[in-house]
Every structure is written in structure tokens, then in C-alpha cells.
Amino acid sequence: MLLTVAVTILVLGVLIFVHELGHFAAAKSVDIEVPRFSIGLGPKMFGFRRGETEYVISWIPLGGYVKMAGMADEEVTSKLEGPDGGVSGDSLELGPRDFDAKPLWARTLVIVAGVIMNWVFAIVAFTAIAMGEGVVEPRITTVSPDTPADSAGLMAGDLITRIDGQSVRDPLQVILLIERKPNEEVRLTVDRDGESLLIRATPAAEEQFNEIAQESRTVGRVGIEIGPDRYQLGLGRAFAHGWGSTVYWSRAVIQFLGDFVTRKASPREVGGPIMIGQISGQAARAGPWRLLSFMAIISINLAVFNLLPIPVLDGGHLVFLAVEGIQGRPVSVNTRLRFTTVGMVFVVGLMLWAVGNDFLRILGI
Image (tube, rainbow, N blue to C red; front, side, top):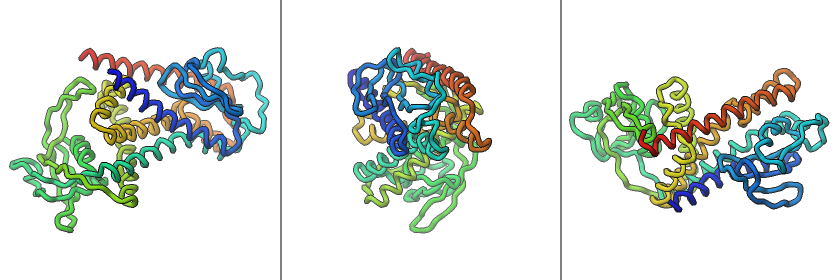
């Protein structure tokens, strides 16, 4: 239990720090005043001041923020900080180091820097794993008889390089892509003794209990096993692997969001901090490389989530900036505050929903 709590704090703390560090560094690079850098939300637990910035740890470990002078949208989020952390929105006069006084390109850079840092963390993590623990090739070791793979002509020794045109780099990617296509044809590109072959197979439908959603779902299976042999990569190939893995998981998260909107994915699959904590604990027990891999995947989830066009998230800020670029003038402060308030309510509701799913999962409901 103590290990799970400690690892959860580590995972969330590191990833929030990485994201907010991106905003902070970008703000400083374009000379924006930063009064506060917070890991966590809500009232301050403790902190210290260095120069113009107060660095704090706050009580609610569900996010963080970099407060920038003259950023009107911060008025809403600052209300969560407590009596000593609010900003004043009474004056619209902008100083030279205020966020809203900076050119459009500078503000855009500051907003996107957080998600860029999350992706950079994932690339570095996957690269380190490929160099340290090594990677497992998606090479087939066994083809079960009388299965879709057997009927399609797949053979032991085939190295799967692409599925439906999408590059794959490890067995988990192969499993997840095939699982999505029960009773639907998939195109597998394999390397067989140096020759590239395109093989079509139709995964058989199989019922599988989804422990996250606590319900059964239908998945695709073709009847193959992939070998566990690992080998370490040099820096160049490891970086390519890290980049490819980050692109794959980014697509997977976007695909899940699409499935969620179209109801192909269960709402019960949305997890919160308790689920992150449980999986973090399991990953830590499996070893530091598994924990680092899990952190990379969560970092990508944070990056994609923050790009959603919801006011209060980075994606919402980018929408305001895009509108400003199109119409040639900023969106009014009052309009931004109204939309940001709605966005805050939506995000808090989503957090409560995720935490509710966590408790239902624990109770086995």
C-alpha cells in the first residue's frame, strides 16, 4: 500500500512537473513574469520564493499550473488557490512583461510548450528503455493450427512490421491493433527472410473480460505467439524506436477518444488517480523499466488530453489564440472568463466521473 501511494505521487509529480516546466521555461524565454509555479492545485501546502517566482506544492495532486502575469484566463483557476494565491482581474492595463501583452507567436509558444515537454519525456523514456532493457521484436514464434493466422499463411519466424499500413515496433502494439478488428480483415506486412510480404487475415471474435471497465468485450485473435527475446539498441536506432513508440501511443490515445465519442469504448474505461496509482504500483513491482514505460504512456495521455479544445486546458487557450489570429484582435476578457468557467466545470466533472469509476472498479460493480 505504501509503495503504491509513494509511486503514485512520484508518477503524477514528475509528469506534472515536466508539463509545467515547459510552460515555465517558455514563459521565461519570452520575458513573461511568472509569480507562481505550482505542483498540485488548491491551497498551498508549502513552498519557497526565488526571485519573482514562488515555487509551491499544493494540496490537490490532480494537476498544476504556472501563473503568468496578465493572463486573464488565470482568474478562474486562481480561485482554487486559496486566499493567498489569487490574482486581480480588476485592471486591464497590461505591463510589458504580461502574457496578454506579448505577440501571438510568443503566447502560442508558451501554451504548446507543456504538451511538447510531455512528448519529449515520452520519447526520451522509450529511447532509454530501448537502450537499457532492450526491445522485443514482433516476430512470430508460433502459429496455432486451424486459426486465422494459419489459414492466411503466416509462419513462425515472420517479423510483423506493419498492420493496416501502421508501423509496429513491439508485441503489445500488434496485440492491441488486432484486438480492435474482430471479424474484420487486417493487412499484415511481414518480413520473411528479407522479403516483404502482405498477408490478409480476419481475426476471430473472442469474448474477453475488461478488468478496467469491469465488463466483457469482443476482441480479435489470429492465433499467434510472439517471442520474448530482447535485444538492446544503439542510440540512433533507440531514438527511432522511442519516436515511433510515442507516435503510436499518441495515435492510440486519439483513437480511444474517438471510440469514446462514438461509443465504441465504454465510459467505464475512463480511469482516475486511483487507477493510475494501482497500475503504477504494479509497474513498480515489475521493475523500473516497466514503471518508466507506464510513465511515458501516461505522459502521452496528458499531452493529448491537454490539447482538447476545452477552455481551461491548453487546447482551449490555443482556440482563443487561433480566433485572435483569424479576426485580428483578442477574444474579449469577459468572453474568455465565461468560457473558462464552463471549461473548469466540465474538467472537474470529468475528474469526478473518473474517480467514481475508480471506486466502482474497487467495489467490483
